[in-house]
Image (cartoon, rainbow, N blue to C red; front, side, top):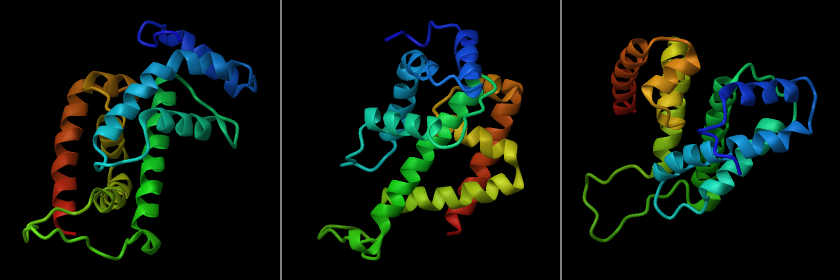
Length: 192
């Protein structure tokens, strides 16, 4: 596998454009270029999941990649656009898994109570993820740029600089949006 951190972004962009133009043979080449970076994104996401999670970063990468290339014709403008789509695909996979986990047949309506639990017990991770997804959708309706910054920073694990590059905005705008979004999300999550 090629180390994606040393592969030129324009090479990835060129391959993405070839795939978008209908050249399916480039998918394997793209995979070898982006695999390490996608795996790092998946590790960041999985580190935030509930303990005992059965989905592994490698499986998350594979499933996200299949979603990205499956179905309709992919249309990526750049490397940044691809990684934004990959982050969103991973987020959707985790949201779908959280919804499945929360269903009644998985004990979704029941609260597990440990004998030594305190009254201040925290919400299970899947419920928190679902609530965050709902609040993030509301934020996107209110301010799409702020929501995109949250997705790239929190879900994709990008740095402020990488987020700025991916979105075509200044790092200062990323920091400002992060700060405002964090306060807004905290307030909305607290009121649920």
